[in-house]
Length: 314
Length: 310
Image 1 (tube, rainbow over the protein chains, first blue to last red):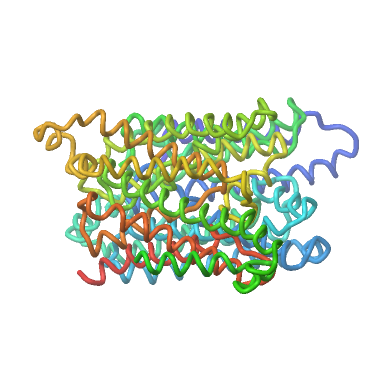
Image 2 (cartoon, rainbow over the protein chains, first blue to last red; image 1 turned 30 degrees about the vertical axis):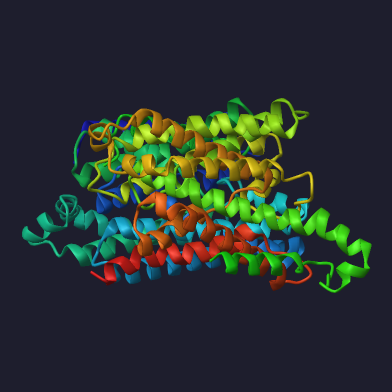
């Protein structure tokens, strides 16, 4: 386990977290530290969840350009937010307590994902590509409905939806954060115990089965974990579409291995590092709020183009 | 087929927010004006758009040699929107024709890039191409949203994203005749497209100037998409669903099937537009929304039903 690169990443992450907490600390120290702690925990958990979920999805689908966002998760989240504002109005939708909103988002996304995975996989005899494409088409359908609802809104309602279109780390609810962390810990424990089986599953369905791995059941379990991680992190902060793509590419090029015992921690740490360091730079140096997600999306998108031109997508 | 189209067009002339009776045309000059300024242009716009989009879709499918592509799944639409956004920001006073040209140029670049990329994908994995195309479109769309957010044009972008015909009046849709003309032009090259659909090596062996045909196809598809986006907005699935429905019955000889594809596209879109006018009368649901839901359902059936039959 004591891989030098993993340890190095850990040190970097600790340094970034320390900078985030203690840079420019003035005034009521205890109060500010507490606020920053919550934000830091949010950044770390969302980062780790997105990184791990993307590595898992790419392993299961044997495809290096996929991120969970493309399978309609983000589109469903936006549809939910738009629907709430359109249905209840500004006053009504702002009266929903944050924890209830989080639980609603997470539950709807998780339920939809599980329904999709189980029904489509059974129908297509575990053709994962077909399942991904189904998710993408459903995402397009959600976007169509969202666009229609947004046409009906007045600009002030729309501006509320607009703030939820990109990930926000400033207003994370504490109770929701604790719940999310608990669920993530469970998922990570399961992954830690099964990382060797994942290595075999990455060889493809036939190879894995001939080596004695119950591939289909494993696939379903991993998809459930992906659904849980993505739903929780999206409900917590908002959609981050291309972060996963950026992270998995960096993790692969740094670790140069297919062993999940190394890939998963590396991806989780890189992802958290990008978020924490990015947020530090934005808040403390550039004094900007809420544009971090935008920059990350940009870099991820550019990287995807680069991968596509190199032909490295399967 | 022709009869059905005429019937739909007739219905479309007399359906709308302000009531219009066929009997009133003889006695009431205002009814005639309504017909000339709003109803006839709108019906023509829907028919032209449906036909041109379906034709663009089928050409795209032959050129990429994949049943699951259309301008909406290859980044063409998103590239056109990026161009449109850039023009709106840089020179807001640009006339519509100039905006159209900018959108076309950027759609052309986006589509050409995707076709180059798609060549690297092995043909034995047909689902990878639309997947890569959708991700590619998503990246372009993300770029467009960011620019829109910085300049507070996001709701504007949303209006381009759901294609609809309620704003069509005489004098505001004439660019679509150009799209119809392009679809007609592609009919004369239908046989060349059919051969190009057999792949580069076969085409060259048969003496086809493959590069020229490919270029002409890309230009046609990009121009049609740009024209439609500038005048009515994005219409997803039209170019995807219609050619697939027709090709199941008629096969892939474009010389025979292109008129049917164009006619079916026009008819289905008009049906969706009429439905959109009636479902929340007197308010309207955009035709793009109605077709998006219907098209997504058909596409999912195509994807999943295929396996069920073996």
